[in-house]
Image (tube, rainbow, N blue to C red; front, side):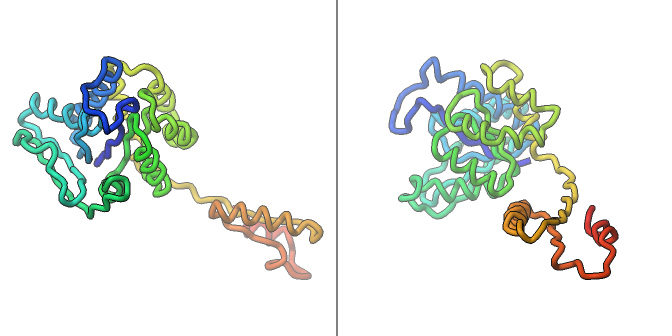
Amino acid sequence: MKILFMGSVPTFPRTEERELSDQEKPFAQACQEIGYVAASRRHTILLSDDHPASADYHVFHGALRYAGEAQEKSVQIEVNRPEGSRLIFDGSPGNVRIDYRFHPDYEHVMHGTLLPCLAALESSDVLVTVGGGLTVKLMGQIAADREKPVLAIPSFGGTSVQLYENFRYYYKNILKDKINVLALLKSTWRQGCAEKALDLAEALKQPRSVETPHSYFLSYVWEDSEFADHVEVLLHRSRRVINRDESIFRAGVDLSDVVKSFIN
């Protein structure tokens, strides 16, 4: 499975050059744990940033730690970058395979990161966000619009909290018995949370059977036809099949048989 990781320390502006504070270090530790678990499960890790405040940077170092401990195993990483930008994460051990992909650089749009982020999103199976700002929020919304699974981890604030709240009803419908596990990620990050997060990401990616939607029969009096029109529009927006009586009924037809033939 290809997992795209995005996010950053919400309290660390990219314009600053400094070490992480003691309050920010748990973010780095959590991302390293996630990267370690993702690598150990043989997932392909998608990254695009090496800023010390980014989730990418620490996920990479977590995967690197796994590669050092399991030198007989290979770690797969895909890096999406703007054309003309420098290589990041180069000089890695031999069992870390990095596939670099470069995309047109439109510097005036999100500092050139928009196309690499969109390409990474398109290539991924699931998006995992931690912390983050505007870019994370935008990519999360685009992913949802494209029906790409998104796991927003709210433990460290940022726009991942907004994504989590926006998608919680989606999570409830998809994760079902695992929804309580997701709720744990709102609390303080602790040992074992990385494994739980990857369990959830894998569950979101699992293929699901799609139930055939019901068809709907609208019956009404002509005085209320405008209300029927409104209901029909709402149902059409949900891609439902609508049957209306004026197009299928005529004098002498047994209504009960007609209704039965159009209702699932």
